[in-house]
Length: 259
Length: 259
Image 1 (cartoon, each protein chain N blue to C red):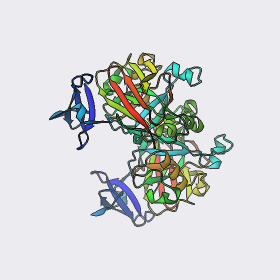
Image 2: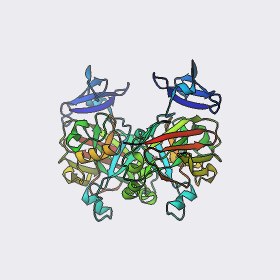
Image 3: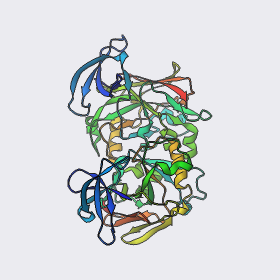
Image 4: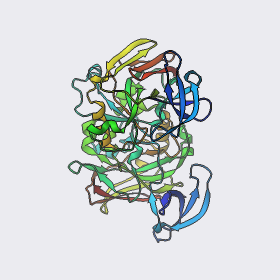
């Protein structure tokens, strides 16, 4: 099931996307009240092309992991991957939706794409054992962990470099049926493939990340966990378009603009 | 004006604390709907001693600064303070109220108090110039930036070490009339003074921090900005009681418990 958040001019609403997106036949059926518990359909159904998709969730926090693909650790100049996941937070104010611009805060400085698989949490939980990790997952979406590369190294702490407004595009929707153990992931810039990987190469798997992160802090319904980026990160400039595809989910596309 | 959040068994409510706390004569007058815009009093007034104070605000984010007092930079083994503020985030799930226990996640490892002045933001804002910074401030409260010291150095990123549940006590209330340019700050452990400083020693002042932080990301009503801790940080053990006092605000007291 594909759960989206959309607006047709009125209040943002959750809905289920049905039918073929590729053939232009997809529709979205509005649901109420939200997908984190029992819900019903309102009866409103709209062609997907006639609504505006929003970030599929408004997370209370975006908890992310650094250096979780060995090939990316290497390209960043590291030798051995960290033994434990390195956690960092992106603020909720960084979240953007499909099609929303990624706003470059300082075009004299390097701003990178980092395509990632994102986990959407379904319910309040803490200290979730690895074996039960999938029971707290609503589904998965695509994310771009946008990063000011020079700020990242200058500050040491990654919060500012990764925390600017629009630096966490999410979407296009939440796929509830994905197997996250081997999903292909690609990032393109103006249509050219820049990152290509599979979640089979994650150093810390999705269940391990959920166990580790929920041991560090309580997770809430709608919280988003980012799983790390494969090799191939690089800069984006205003006027370009970046797209993150996870096989089995879909494609998250965002234009880059100057402030 | 002292703005508190409290419960007398029913729904949490904002209120204004009036009268002398020291003489046991203080009351809290409930207000509606919230203190981030025009509000009215409901007519309900209770003796302060008969209600339970809660964290005075539920922030969407807690944005904090590291190494903002020269004496603390020195005690942490640094030589020169960083040129720019070093930003990090604490998750909203870390927030605790006055009197709430600080829960030690691993008593074999060192958990430190860090007493701080906290800024509470009144309205959505970004790129606030230093000269207008005070216009986005609702008021100030006391905070304890609780930190797992060994996790902090092991991870490099500070998120996990500072992000555990209960690691951001706030309170006892928001003082709207404080002058933050020279407020005395003290942290005591079981009544013994461990940290003593003044915000006059902040490397980056309150207005400078607001300008810098709001240039990095949008701030929302209720967001909390932590201003850094003076020298004297040290470990707390279950069974102890820690208290952070900022002159002109009051005292935030929390017991320490084992998980």
